[in-house]
Length: 191
Image 1 (spheres, rainbow, N blue to C red):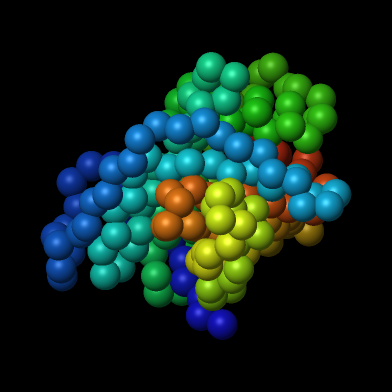
Image 2: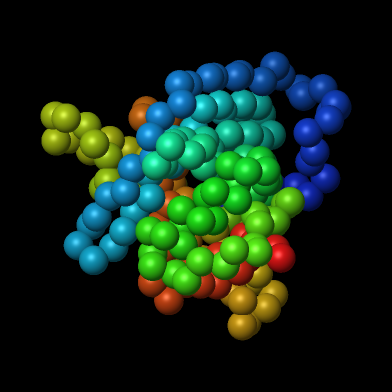
């Protein structure tokens, strides 16, 4: 398995020039989907932008759910297993937390907001079969599979989820074990 991570020094402002030009792809805003695989619930979150370079991917995860925009940004450098970063987009990110709580039946916390920046560790799982895809032919494609570990230094808050990227369908598949959901919510939120 190959591993990679994000570096914590990333920001939205001007950055040093990359060794090669970054490729930027833009996609239309679409609805969020919820898929079921047996008892598992899988969130299918569309992304509207992906910027790829030799050193990282920057993904704008943004979709519509019940008339509201939900989403966040993701920084994914390619070189190590440390420092995967989720970045708040303001209201869409706060809406994502509410969506997460609603989908999984977690009591809604009215005062929490998506943290400005959430760092995690990330392990590449390689190419995996797309189990939740909605290809009308019934055939599933391949996706880039990752396992993300939040608060790995804190045993009481340590949590993990699968974060899979389908570049074919322009979406992120997010899934986790039921006992991880409350801890993931805590890792992503601030009061």
